[in-house]
Amino acid sequence: MKGKRFLKIIGIILALVILFFAVTSVITVAGRSNNMKKVESFEQVKIENQLVPVEDENGYWTFTTDEDFKVLQLTDIHIGAGWMCHGKDLKALNAVAAMVTAEKPDLVIITGDIAYPIPPQAGTDDNLASAELFAALMEKLGVYWTVTFGNHDTEEYSDYNREQIADFYENSGFKYCLFKSGPESIDGYGNSVINIKNSKGEITQSLFTFDSHSYLNHDILGFGHDYDNIHENQVEWYRECVEKFTAHNRAISGEETSVPKSTAFFHIPLKEYQDAWYEYMDNDFKDTENVKLLEGIAGEGGVIVFLGDGEDGLFEAMLELGSTKAIFCGHDHENNFSLEYKGIQLSYGMSIDYLAYVGISGRGAQRGCKVITYSPDGSFTSKNESYYQDKYASQFEKETVDMEELTCATVVEE
Image 1: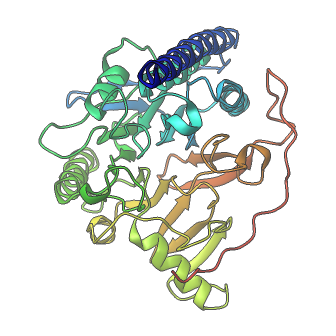
Image 2: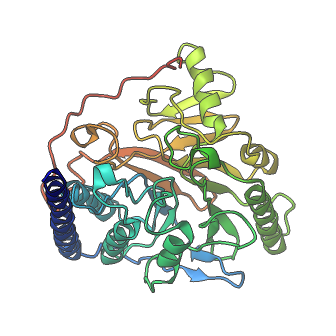
């Protein structure tokens, strides 16, 4: 009798589990379908005389203009695409569409974490579904765009790995996506360059995108926040590109000082972000000989900057070559500062995230975008823009949030 009762209980539990997965699967499919229909309801962005890139003889996407060139940096979109977060996903898509539509950029660069396939918060581990929603939105808006990978885009337990998601972005026939997986000889996916040239054929700005990878092997699930870094062969690839582009410009201008200006985009910040902020903080939040605050604040607690582990050599190579004048990253959702450090701007974009950080859906001071404007002489300006400005008119109702300013963080001893 006891054995039959035990089997009955097991049967009931199994039936409830099956019912749970059946119901959540239906909700997931219905929610994704509904959000995709809403994505399709957005209108194409009207850009007068929209620049159209072409692939040059070396396979680099290239824009040609003698005017200013506008890049919109978005970061940490965090689309879950599961049964637990359809409402938050729509808010994220709505915010992206509003800012892209208002800014009318020549190019959108997303610095990581489009996807957030974390089952306890999203209700799924299908990271391709997140990528599909976002790609559909960008293609509907009709603005050129590219992606750098973050740690959440391809979790160890996600349905699809980095190579597969890279293949989706690169080979799905998208009209406006400029993502390239990059050379097979170097680590990661998305190591690429987009060049801006003038009518003479000179490179006035090179936009480098790097894969800053994910977690270290001993922390593959990310519980310890032990992040990987830019690898040595990526640094060598960067160096070779700068030297190649310098030779290209010299062949046109005949000048020995024709090193093209460049900026870099990736997800996880370098150690120099932490070095610069700590130096600024230790000087009573005043500029130093090495550090100048340009805008924003460090709003993260703990160590403040959740950086890649170990020395990478990229910042040193940038100082040596004299080409790169700014790095734009994401990852730390409540950091939005820009510091000039040893002559190079180290900058965070403003995050979109409605899902990952606890309670962040109801907070707004950190949410927005960064507008970067490149001049024909290679100089640039960059500015954080809050999503909650009237100029960003959203198609679906914009949520009411707490706009209390971020509190400047100090180091928490662990």
